[in-house]
Image 1 (cartoon, rainbow over the protein chains, first blue to last red):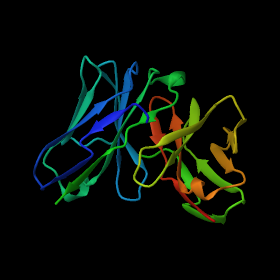
Image 2 (cartoon, rainbow over the protein chains, first blue to last red; image 1 turned 60 degrees about the horizontal axis):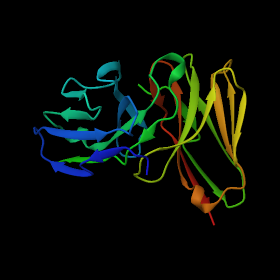
Image 3 (cartoon, helix red, strand yellow; image 1 turned 120 degrees about the vertical axis):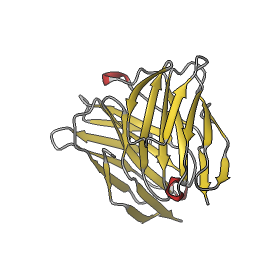
Length: 117
Length: 108
């Protein structure tokens, strides 16, 4: 158990809909990362937050948005869903401030599997 | 976009053999990390090597880093069926980017 909790574990929805994925980081971790993993693919970095502020942005579509709340949990919002958005969405957390020399080990949740029909 | 690229994409070996996976990357890094993923599960951190280090060991794992060639390798010695998983390298600069992974199958 990594200590990172993601909900829901599975989600099935239709094209055009909107969903929210939730992540609770490990106790004490200030950084939260979101990744997308399509079938049999690597992980695409979406976005990173540190202590409530956006710190780095990757290949996140404009239809997607995220935020980190004062209690450090994070939500990833996916809207106007398309078939190609079907994927595993991972959240990971770390203690380190994700800049330059300080990013160490990431702790991953078990992911939220999104299926868009 | 992904930073690291693992090679080979897939590797199948017998139990007891060694498995070597390679990772190439394109930009400067502060550190490079290797992770393991069992099918459909979350990734688990294996080992971290800093940019000023050349080799690191952890149990049956040996990682090397050549910053001049922008490459790293992960060696798993005396492999076991339980090592069957996908292995990813991740490069760290201002964020953490993963490669596409190597799918390792260890046959009993």
